[in-house]
Image 1 (cartoon, helix red, strand yellow):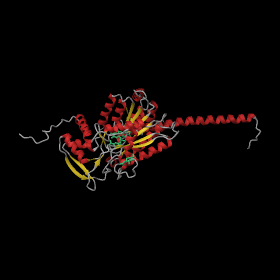
Image 2: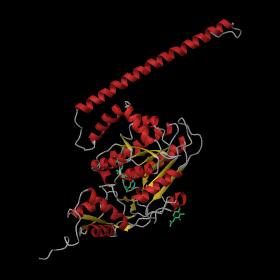
Image 3: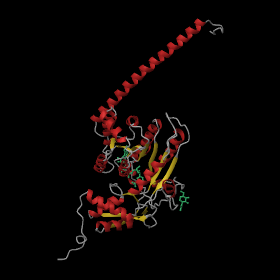
Image 4: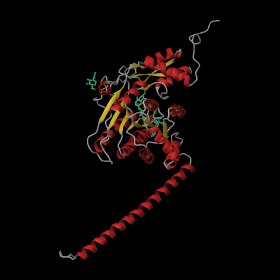
Length: 447
Ligand SMILES: NC(=O)c1ccc[n+]([C@@H]2O[C@H](COP(=O)([O-])OP(=O)(O)OC[C@H]3O[C@@H](n4cnc5c(N)ncnc54)[C@H](O)[C@@H]3O)[C@@H](O)[C@H]2O)c1
Ligand SMILES: *[C@@H]1O[C@H](CO)[C@@H](O)[C@H](O)[C@H]1NC(C)=O
């Protein structure tokens, strides 16, 4: 029934009151549905917990137990909020120099992450690490790196990129100015064995991190590891940032390329400052056991034969090997020149920085020469077996053009492969307790 325009004040008041009552009752419904939601969530979590404890992994995939582990250790216990844990995070994230940065380093128990964490800490920045310590390669090496960081008061939170409550809590406890995002499923060949691990860490995990970062107050600036593999079957030489990157040769490369596109989106929508770094075959002390220079060293020392790839057109495979200290300088340079994100409260306030840089050595070396240098350093002849590259995602050639990184933050690689490998081998024999060979021993002895 239409109300006449000249309604009395009491009628208006009455309508206003009923309006208020309506609001209150919706609030009540909201509150009770929230309670119901929380109870359901709790029940679901308890059920999941029950099933993960009761049932063995569904397959014999060695990576299955990781999820069980992270579910138990992070989602339920750490996030539950240990005061001691919070204190460690706060202390580790606090800079020790005026205007120091506070950096969350993901993948801090990894090769590049551990080196970058130490370098940041050394110059007085606050550093908190995040790593899930997965067993893609020997986790004891990750634990050893963690110990190294612990000695320098860098705390590594054990958890997964996909753990949203954990990440929110981290940002709540420590207002990071920067994220150096290095956690990823690395390795080109392993993608054929475990493709999903690449999607989980490099795509889903990255998106989760960006979701948390965009909602954080203040939003951090993000510097993250892409890869030279995005150039894929690119035939330009050297590889420049403006070259096409739409022909990835592996799923790994495709996930890094996807990361670059996702970075564009989060920069565009939320004003996140994002810098992608395309690393070119990084090597050095505390390196990755799944990389050729590392397992060649191991196999040569154990007298096992090594496979050296040649291309399908019978050419030598070459890589632009980049020494870890050079890459660390590049990472810190990118962090230092990263502008602030512009968004707040999950909303963009203005255009923000979006960058991509090559970090390479600018001098590709044939793998045959890598082996020759190792033979000299190890004083042992390698049993070489030259085969045509299988189609497993490897590319025949990489060569970085680093003009842009040089222009923007003075990046200048200074370590040649022979010098870098000498440092690697020195670390390797020390870490694995290998007795040095003398020149005499490696030659046939004469009575
Ligand atoms: N080393 C290279 O030659 C090279 C070349 C190009 C790009 N990259 C990229 O640089 C970054 C660092 O590489 P690296 O050589 O130090 O590798 P790494 O495997 O030693 O380090 C990555 C770390 O991330 C952790 N991690 C993986 N998935 C995770 C997840 N979902 N949640 C939490 N932690 C997780 C791992 O446990 C590991 O400690 C990676 O993004 C890699 O793809 C490396
Ligand atoms: C290297 O990259 C820069 C852009 O950063 C470009 O101007 C230059 O032409 C490239 N050099 C070569 C040799 O491709």
